[in-house]
Image 1 (spheres, rainbow, N blue to C red):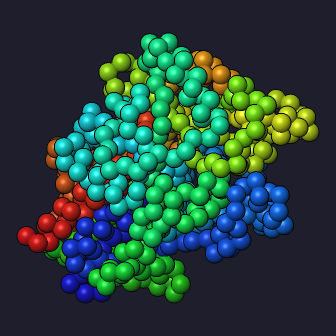
Image 2 (image 1 turned 90 degrees about the horizontal axis):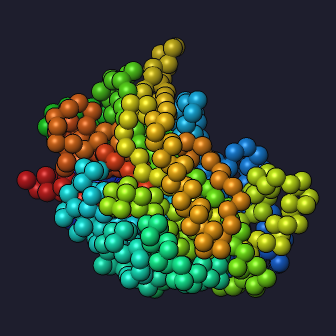
Image 3 (image 1 turned 90 degrees about the vertical axis):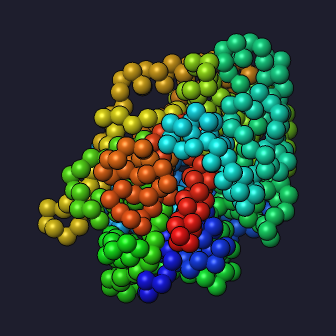
Length: 540
């Protein structure tokens, strides 16, 4: 490939696609290198019908609900949760061999699929508050504009005026909110009655911002309310980055190349970057050249590429990750009520706890109804024999609420990743150590007790708390943090990697802090910003 290529983007996830847009739309030549695994089996089997109808009528439902090899039946820990159903298993395919990672206390998830890990994200899209942006290394005034650009591009829906308005970040470009299901309507009605009591506890409830269409946009359809969102994406209503790749391919100056595994990069001079990749079809090495390189391969893989390219083996990097707790609840006020057939499977409500009263250390939870998920996922976690538990679950399933609670995270000495060379010299492995400070863990448990008390006030009785394990939120950041300090293995506020003239980091590796609300929407906004900066540099 000629050095006349303006920019090469590594990856095809949320950051990669949105970093490419400003460059492609301005007419600059962009090549995206990706492995690009995708589902070629299950999505073709799923009928465009509501979940209740599928369960009653489709004789092939076991194939995509359980998987041909029963890969949808987890026997161990809850792990990544309900999002990684058989039609989404390709998101994690072959990473153990192609992106080897080892840890005794951290369940790292990588992706080589088209769309990356966001191929299975929950689509909650809260902007960061100004204080959260500053701690992440970002300029609030600058990023607000990019939030709006991305929101218009992907489609974000949500309510404008409720008790979360001051806590979830500002966003003007919004579609109408998704319709709540019966559980959510009753819970919110109860919140209105208990509002003053809960607000004194600094607990607030409202509707989430979601990257889901409620009105048509760019050939995509509004959500059909089939309650099949964990299994399929009918009409492309939920934004996933793999939808952005074919949009970019409409431009003649954009090229999507797969299956290529990028292994390292090297600067030959100002504006001359060589990228070394391996084709997974021919298994031969190839060299690509470009004037600018944008790393957006996912925070952990970007860190791996930088450490390998700089030959910085055994050099620990910081790392952050949202700690996640699942709280299954029985919404007893809903017992005996007929559930709505017209509903979606995504987050119905968001609860935010402000423990310090200054919006600096928020704890956030999404509330989901459980109707379209398989009951066997809960069997092993309830303290009764399976046969009796199944009968109980069948009776109460329409009134089950799953609360997915997340905590903020900041870098500390006990949370690191290190690239280790193999003993035989044939490769390397990313090693992760994860030992959060005891005081942080104690604070998290204290916050969870407050949230559980609030849930009881909302007539949602928590059965227990379930820890899926460190790392299973799949929200990773801070390995190459943005900072004003001129330090090795960091990025400048522009996103340029220190020690280079033309390499930029556009994914979570550059964010210095991770609030509780999840980072994907902010990743997209920051990637659009980085792409715009690269565009200006090419024009200079």
